[in-house]
Image 1 (cartoon, rainbow, N blue to C red):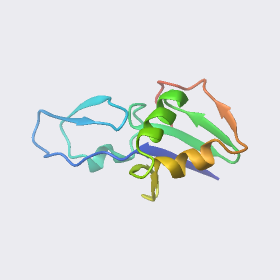
Image 2: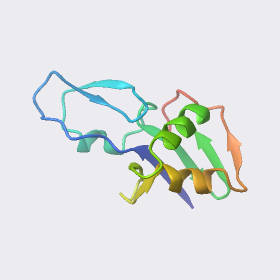
Image 3: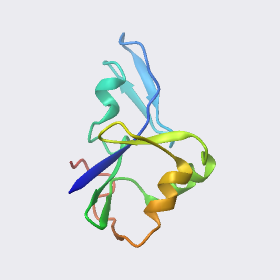
Length: 110
């Protein structure tokens, strides 16, 4: 069993050039509407993947934790099924008894 997690992105008009700013502050130039970016494997959007009891990070875990602490009550993350999580929700389980793999930070993977 595995589940990927992504930043929730704001909607943008489909006309280029447009940009999307992730909750972590990364700017993405887009030529497509935001829904096509929602569950992409771009490491600026893809936070990581939980596989059984191991979390594979696509982004720097400390940066993600900082952004989550800044948005404790806001839905800023969603899983691949569209279920949103607040910063507090994500921090609540990501810091539980999981193994962490940081070897894929900045890489595109699914």
